[in-house]
Image (cartoon, rainbow over all chains, first blue to last red; front, side, top):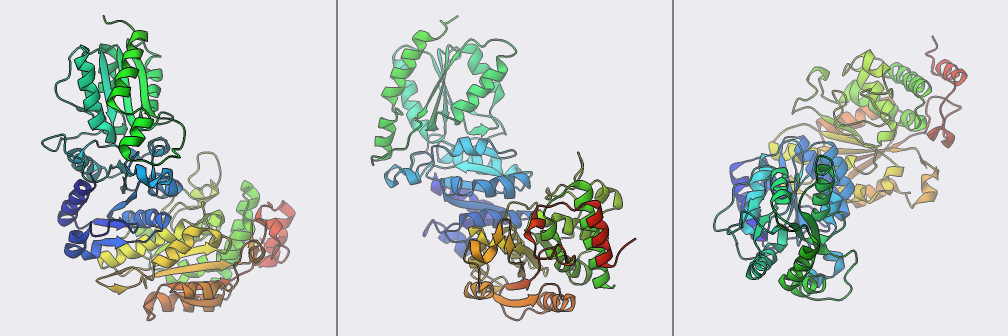
Amino acid sequence: MRNAFRDAVYEWAKRDERVVLLSADIGNRMFDAFKADIPNRFYNVGIAEQNMIGLASGLAMSGLRPVCYTIANFTTYRVIEQIRVDLCYHHQPVIVAGVGGGLSYATLGSTHHSCEDIGMLRSLPGLDVLTPGDPPEVTACVELAKQKTDGPTYIRLGKKGEPPIHADVPTLKPATWITMPDGSDSPDVELLSCGTVLPVAIDAAERLRSQGLGVALRSCVSVKPLDPSALEQAFTRSRLVVTLEEHSTQTGFGSAVAEWKADRELTAPLSAGLLRLGTPDVFLHRTGSQAYARKITGLTPDAILKRVTESLVQATPAG
Amino acid sequence: MNLSRTAAELRATVIGMSHAKKCPHLGSALSCLDITTTLYGSVLRIDPKRADDPDRDRFILSKGHAAPALYATLHRFGFFGDDVLERFNEDGAELAEQPSPGCVPGMEAATGSLGHGLPIGLGMALAAKIQGRDYKAFVCLSDGECNEGSVWEAAMTAPALSGAWGKGLDNLCAIVDYNKLQATGRSHEILNLPNLAEKWRAFGWDAVEVDGHDLDQLVKTFTDFRDANTSGKPKAVIAHTVKGKGVPFMEDDNNWHYRIPNADEVAQARQLLGVAE
């Protein structure tokens, strides 16, 4: 995902002389081509993230299109007030990209995990929150963010080396999710995958299908705004909607869906229940790989299968 | 234009605004009023009728709590009319105690949360370099604001950035309104602020110390920077000021950080400023 992001920004910058890339002392060698070909629009602004966001706002106020890049926890928690005031309040079209979203950098410890970023950011007025699930979706998210001119966009990236799931770059419209192939038209389970866990969601969907359940899977690339049409369909045609994210179940994507559901049910009850799967409300104090971190937080296909089948027992029967 | 007279009248205006609309931070506004008056009256290349001209000089009042000083100055120099100023701090008005983005023509940034103005101004200065424009960016900070780490992040960055133009943003000017007081006490006693000019120099800036109420000295310092900054560095103007300047019973008295003047005090202040009606 990291390299897909780099390539998308590089291609954009080659064609649009307003694009300025800011890195907070990260991406050693990663931006060599950008630096060589567009030297006047790449700046390593040092390990000074607050200044990076304010600087980006000043660039955008002057007609440029800045892109801020560093590790997700530093480009969100560290600078939440700069994003709020300098970017959101001022309606500046700045792209803030966070690499290592969720548990991607699990081995670096909880200082480098970002399992609360979606919650923080989706509370900010005017900020779009995009959560691609594979490299082509990253490219699509950059395309979407480019089109937004009246406010900032956060793009939550994974790490490098994730295999592409889509053969081609999907075309994204604002507030629209991606329907993954082979889904049931009348599913028992609507699986809503947010961001980096998309490969896990695909695996989990297969296991659920092998149990004889109808499953539809969507890659929910936009947490803010949500896709209300997809939600309406998911909650009216299935027995159970399951949100899946490498993020805390408090305030994250699942919480956003729960808020939508609560508001929607003021109109009429929805048939499907909601199961929110994500990381628990704790810091991880034992080290391990991303696979280990997913295992102990219940984000494996087996654990998902177990939680979903248990929840289906409680959910409204089909029909 | 008689800048001294203008500054006195603007002081009377902000004192009246504070009284009429129960707005605090009067001492802070009086502290930086000679800076805003000289900039808009004699230095900045901004046409109020074309306040979004991409080639205009930029000014950001990073110490946003002193916004009445900027409002009164912008109003005086034709950026907006009497009606807007008269609605200051009323329900639904354009002008709040601290500015919102684009609330009036000429308002470059919404400030009030300290430590934001210099990074934004730095971005504007960098944009000029990237776009080949000739404008300058001025940012006025308070000494208390220099408690914020983001100020020093920007201070380290401005001299270091390099591009086709060379190294360092010589089109950025940080003005520290150095009145030696912050909300709850002497700024020297709260954090280790002394040797402020040396600090900026150590960060790579061309730092000078001036009397922040000597209008001729301010005009010369700012104009020299705007027209011919030969240092190749960003400029830091450490302006020694007095909180509450212009009204002896308010000067260097930190009660006026929050206190609102009553009608008698407004009348007395106007007399002392020589602008009694």
